[in-house]
Length: 55
Image 1 (spheres, rainbow, N blue to C red):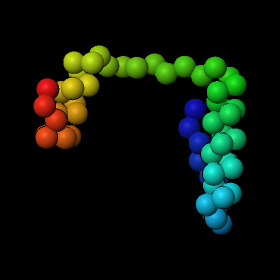
Image 2: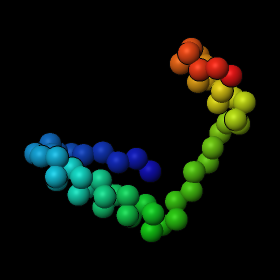
Image 3: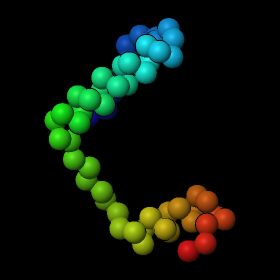
């Protein structure tokens, strides 16, 4: 589930409170992450993005 805003957030404190509320809601639902890649695949992708990483 993604989050989006239908309005402008006026200040950083309000944004922090809203992000914390979204995070708490997600954590309370025991949301899972479905990783679609392996460590080897990750190293390949990161190498392409960050060529200075030594694999």
